[in-house]
Figure (spheres, one colour):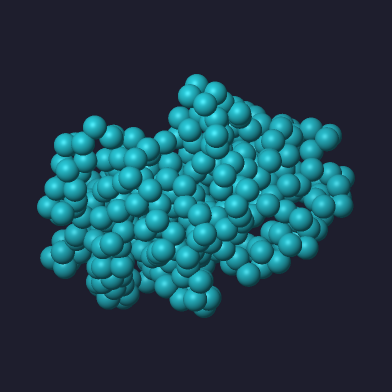
Length: 385
């Protein structure tokens, strides 16, 4: 499905770290954080062990806890909801736009307005069970799906008007731009992730970015077992976690971020190859860019098969031809533990369910060749006939 773009520069940098006695919380972590600050324009960057860890720290730093309601997307990787459940908060889903797959801000505004009046007024937005009579709306966790930022102009206005914490899950969108502004810094806190299929990689790892001094200090402490500034060895001010990034991951990230804009250009070229070759297929919907997207950071190339085509049969047929592909995403509200906990049902979020049943991610990376794209497209066309 994907492959990281690793050169001898990265290999040598990691080897150099292995020749030192410092493998965690050292100068490479600091250097990587500084590089992310410069790239994103954020005041603070906190390197962590994964994007999920970063999102969890954002939830903690926003003081979101038991029974609190947070509006978010059901069309996402499961981690964006799991981090709320870690704190016994309640993810309240809002359906997504058909075109982009990002949160439908019209529905989001309606949900904020109604839930801010109280649970009775916002009943239509609540799950059938799993929340408390003491629940109150505390935040919005918006996802930048597939490398395209959500409509944060509206989301920020809602946060300011109703006093809501705004967390940006930009784990799929480093380098994206929204109305000329970098993704990741559009909310109070934001998170990038660097799994090997992402635009750049640290193997495993993530970075939280924010302009808030207090939140940054809190998250730095929480990632290191809750040790606060000035705490003595084995003294811990807060309940914290081992969310530290290794020096090996950090040096890999430091080199990769220097190459990131080149990666994004290569990924855009691969996306263009796909678009050129698939444009004449009326049984496929190709990715669409929103008018407010001033730079797409291509994470995946996700097409949608037409209604009536069995997407899973297409996946199996591609596999028989030696071509991997994937369904993206299984709706979060229909995951077994979410159904059990909140009694969600099919039909609750129709756009998300439609996209979940028709979306097809094709092989995609910055190292794909034009010949490889030709092969994928020719096989896909034969199957769709």
